[in-house]
Image (cartoon, one colour):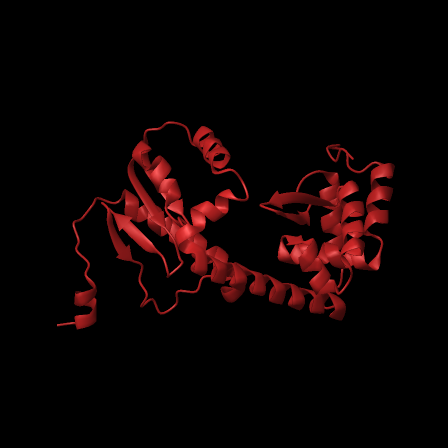
Length: 257
């Protein structure tokens, strides 16, 4: 289906879309994707308590009708509501017409939250256990040279006044592209990682009273606020005149004098 007709849905498109949405499980899947953003087949089997072949069949029908989109992330295939085209408008209208207080849909949303939280916790646990070999592990999913070549082409040669890497992880982006900028900064909210300046490692603040900024812990609205404010603060501080400051753990532990 083209989904690009500015006049709206044709009768054939409307019929195909409504047929694809007009089934109890498929309505639940549309509502879940609207609430959760993106889910894979394994997530949906856990949430809905149905078999993988059945869930896959439902997803295939809705993807063919243009109501949802599929995309690959590593070895996983995820699905989300269509975000463009007239079919996307139909999908959003169908979801908007559902009763938000429906007990089945509310239970599905609660299960989706639990599944997403478990997945995020498993990912964090895995990363913590394998942080030292993360670059090698990541290369097993997509060839590192392909990813870096694509980023290189997208970024350009610079020079740049400022390069900010939010969620810097292992610092690989700064290693690759830091020399193209007058100033390069990397930020990460993971408290088990380190920052490096002039070859000297510094522990990220383990005494932070609220280090957990995972979206499943603080909620999507608060997470969006955190990302917006941290990004704005990072850019603001990077653009301000540099003032020489010295921070030492000993001075913090000594307390006020």
